[in-house]
Amino acid sequence: MKAFWTLHSNLPREGPGDAAMLDRALRAARVAETAQILDAGAGPGADIAALLTHVPRGHVTAIEQHADFARAAAARFAGNPQVTVKTGDMADPGGAYDLIWCAGALYFLGVEAGLRAWRTALRPGGQVIFSDAIWLTAARPDEAVRNWQEYPAMTDRAGVARAIAAAGYTLLDDWVLPDAAWEAYYTPLEARVEMLPPQAETDPALAATLAEARSEIALWRRHRRVFGYGLFRVRLQ
Image (tube, rainbow, N blue to C red; front, top):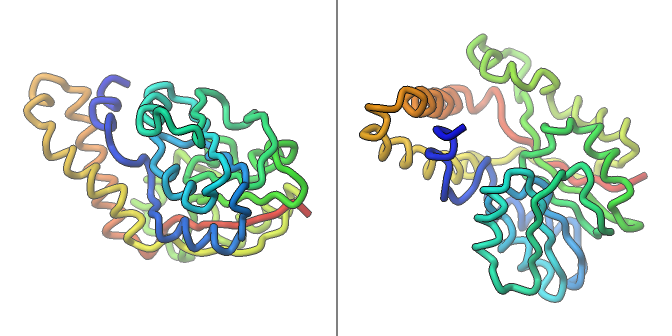
């Protein structure tokens, strides 16, 4: 775990995503300026500023399980009365929200289970916008399949749509995140990987972590047309 934090501390974000796709989805959602938004699994707070632009008289509550990430998000928005950052379980966020935003973190709960858990956290008419790893093609190279073994529930857009319906939601929109959203994550990560080899010379765990990150980035660049992230906008039925 120490090696992980050495690599990931102070990165701008912890998964694929960018403000352009967030803006597109939030415009489609037509949230009120006074809306209450939950950023579930907020990481270091990469999306909070962009969310705030859509609710200039509203509030963003960010919840993150990992205390180090939560502290980083809180530091980014220290003194901002429109932002509350909490360390906790996104499956039990409390509150009553007009919108739940979840960038790449729903897989920790599972799409169907996570959406079910959030039913009581949504106000009437509330929406959820989430991204999740999906297969983009039926033909899947073995190395890509091995890379995603830790997420056995990973499916395609149709499979996510079935999970959404099973959880009692209606799918309103879905998109595939563009390459720019992945580069927004991988470019800073790759720069950090290239900074750390001197430390890794005496730290086998860190050396292994850097090698794994290099492999992950290279695999996505080889197979970016095979897997990606879908962005889904849903509302309770």
